[in-house]
Image: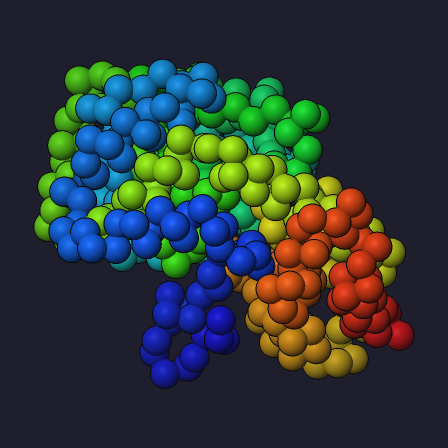
Length: 406
């Protein structure tokens, strides 16, 4: 990740990637990919039968019965989201903050993006009253809001919206006549699944919600791009899927053949894949909780992390100390922390937060170790916080935060 350059490149080319797991590729996945390496043809636009059926089995195991005719696959979530937004039309409402790549997708299509504040308890979903007011205002000004993007396990805030807040947001979307696209990429990275209930808008609005899942969230490495999209099983959903396939075809957004084989394997969640996902979520949860304690101990703010591989910290209470170091906004905070920590720490401006707010997404992956051996040791440790290299990494980060208060 690089800072936004002044030469007119804009924020897209230099935007932050999703938080990486920091773990070696699962050997069983490597074996499956290697076995399909001689498959030269890509999947057809929208994915072949085996891949779409595997997606159906995945969703059915989570309470969302799905037909292969209601599924489309693509090479990662961004091409799929671009295709469905292009097919549906209209302006888009998004929570603030939101994933760094959502807003550029909307603007690339020439549509307008309207950001709605999130509730104090969590990120990922808009405050329902603010959503209704935003829709009313936008329509009064001649806008055409049609789609709401939200996330049930959020990047950047690392939170999961409580069921009642998700329901209120869905009811507000229904009242406003909005189609909902739910990004559920991070749902399988929940740190404590026994204590955290993850629901989908497709359960609440079965005729009015699509579900987007990028397999890089928990099932595949980020460098093996594959994602699936579940459409409503309605005539409107059938129409939208057909138009989405038109966009995927026109843009050549097809899943590579060998990657499709690995995706089918991963979506069926054999023991090795399921165990790795659970262990990785537990590891990142332990490190994120420790990072949360360090942030609060330094006098900063952050919601307790519930999912993902990151923490979203608000360093506004440390503004005075940051100002003494020449840091007055989120972009300068990103530069300062990135230099001091030695790894990217994207500022809140990347996620549609206001530039003047001193917010930053801190990843947990770089804290797991400097080598594959150290990271695997963290994965298999009874308590990763007992490992010297993890304690050292957390200590160095704590020292950087403490220096901001001096």
